[in-house]
Image (cartoon, rainbow, N blue to C red; front, side):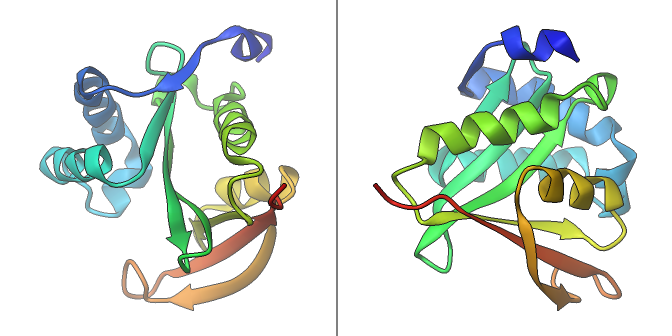
Amino acid sequence: MWYIRMVEFREATAGDYGAMAEALALDPFWASYGVTGERIHHLLKQALTQGSVWVAGNGFGWVWYLDKGGFERAGYIRLLAVHPEHQGKGVGPFLVSRLESQVKGKTLGLFVLASDHNPRAQRLYAKLGYREVGRIPDFVLPGVEEVVFWKPLGLT
């Protein structure tokens, strides 16, 4: 985990999206949502025009950020994904923390959703200071609740 502090954090380019799509297609979590390679490519094309995508290292993980995605008043983490080979090594916390540094003072805070069947993501957000503020049943998939997390950052 120590090496993650030394990796690059940069805005993704279209050249990063092939590796991103490949990695996401390998991850069983995304497959449980029926996310196919084709769907991933569609989402990544959306990301080019909606918000910004940041990458850690050479494709360790990605975070897609929408600056007004939280009720038009706050930021929204649309997607946080870590390459399966780099999971559990601090990439997720690195991405979220670096994103927070980038947007602090420009937004009231950040919203993010985590599926009710993804306790790992829920623990990550809680550990990073996000608090659960609600649940949305059947929002993405029937029978699945999305847990809504919020972290105020404050405008300066």
